[in-house]
Image: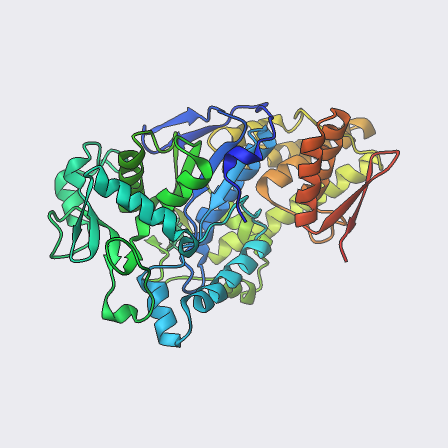
Length: 468
Ligand code: AMP
Ligand code: ZN
């Protein structure tokens, strides 16, 4: 069950400001905190087949942003939806002769298993389109009442000519806008898009009743309805793959802002494509790999995670087996460095609130999530340390910094007794308890519990053990 953002306030202010490229203004902008939680919406998967590793490039970049926001103290509230009603899910359920829910649940479970393997943090809220029919219908009705939408043959279309700001995000000219939109003879103008689609025989028994007749929502309306429900107007940041910029996100802005009269989101975050031989990896081109394919090739999900994150999220990334091999080597070096620091440090690892030796790497992450730069700086530091090992107290601090960076990147190592991110959450909780912020401490205990770890308070601090 998701609770809207307003009821999950914890009252924490960011310690560091994060800068991220904003597609709407075409520049890198600081994410300004507002309210007590920072709303983040990422368009989630359409659950009718395996998600491919291109899809995961986008979800991993979103996960990185979520982790960095957490570490910087923004108190993010992350919503990633499940698209479980569209032509593909309906066709799939019909073909298999099962209910829509049975069909989509199967693919959703596989998606979640992939997410766990790739160490994606679960979002704070994962709403399903089919569970938000009332909200979607209400939004369509509001758009009809405000004369931004019209009904034709049981379908409802958004009247693009009534919304003057249309096209600002994607900056396509009128001719291009017309070229790229869906065909339907009953529309008043070619660029108008469907908010509600009338039931057609191919949909069989899959439909919902509405004031406009039986049918189903268009794809774009679900994200507007769920983002507005859980994050309110003018929330922090909205993201997805770059291909969603037009028409999906353009349409989300038009619908939401026309309905509410308020700005929809403050920031647009788009992830460039994962490519194979220079072409976008996509189901339609058939040039895709899944997480399972990569494991069959002999590489671990962590090696895949590293390979997908190692390029800057705004640059297209060409997927190759060599990149997986390079990730293996890089991870082995990182692990060795962490182990050496831990050995030098002994057992007493302090809590770091500030970065010192590894500050340049953290700064690079805060500056438009520059992972290649951050990794470069970590490796430079590691190289320097080979001839200049730190004394125990410094090694202990540096180990804590290293753990924090590994949490930001979502990297953990099999051999570790307690994964870096679990250790990090436990330390944050200890700090919260010391600062008498018991709401935060309880929240972190629940997070640890969600990850399968139990924390017990002891005279020295805490003790962690895995749930059996
Ligand atoms: P879908 O399940 O098709 O709705 O896509 C889920 C997410 O993956 C969306 O944000 C897409 O923009 C993104 N996506 C699709 N293909 C790629 C790719 N080759 N590289 C990066 N992201 C992608
Ligand atoms: Zn969306």
